[in-house]
Image 1: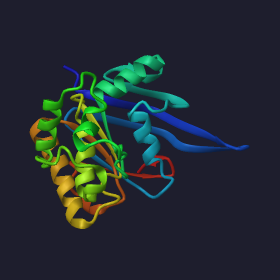
Image 2 (image 1 turned 90 degrees about the vertical axis):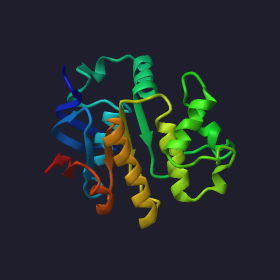
Image 3 (image 1 turned 180 degrees about the vertical axis):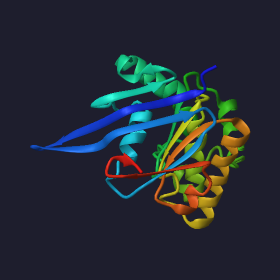
Length: 218
């Protein structure tokens, strides 16, 4: 059985900035196996976020191929891409991206294909937020907000979790709490995780470290 979740083959990504062309990725080769926990590090402009966007089917390569479960993401229609993102990929963002007008419980239920309050409560319990279902974003600490975001990312039982600077807004204590939680999801639930980070402490939790520079894996 093929356990490759994502495969990058000579992937280039070029953006037009006015009259100039910026090469964000330059011939990247990468295989992500089921159950991996990968941290991606590198300076700003190294291509980390571009790589993550392609992994999440938020963009497509200029050249080369990105295969998800063996299928070229360019072959997905717009509707199929959206279905893949909603059903199979969980996203965690640096600034949480919660809806402030919704309760914690409602935020977790928001992306669900079939809204289920009991399932949302189970996910919130899993991330340590039991009895905080009715609170709003402004009533939570940064670490608690990120835990809500993780519960929301798990809402549709994804097989891969993509995290873009998941501890970028957090202090050391909350960084450890969030990374402990991600490590637990990887080791105990078998969730594949790819995290972009500038934080060496956060990167220590990964099983594999990838360093990028100038659009290349070094």
